[in-house]
Image (cartoon, rainbow, N blue to C red; front, top):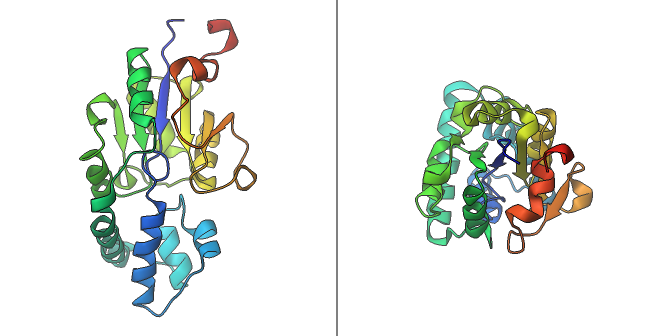
Length: 224
């Protein structure tokens, strides 16, 4: 069982349960513009989506170029201010990542969030030195559900898509991993099983997860 494998984590809803705080930041952002999206609106058009998509959808017109950069920074600054006092990794993930590392699994993070958000979380969640690939929104041209961020992660880690297992919580993120030809664990922090594409496994958190429990997803049967 020496074949190299990799586990790639999304960030929001996968490393930390940030989505409630993104909702608060977007509510404040949209309220200043006399818009009041519902929880259902957010579930369908925010979680796992890029800021370009979210802003364009809710503002009802294409948001691109310099305007996108300005509005994105306004909203993400709100998020970082609101979330900074509450950064907390999802239960069990630190122990799980350490276990994977001890078994030689390569590790990466691939998020649609901007690098400043990723840096904020990695400043409090001590996993950066364990990661062989770290990709944020600025590092790709096409966002989830396009597979670019996962295919690039695999290249960075020196593995093929078939050697990768992805942890994702959103429809678009799971779709991106499946489009990349990777196996996927659905993290049920933002959606129910019924709301997500079919995954190889579903979890609520990482408390009972270990390398031994997922190795059948990391290796083909002939490699075990």
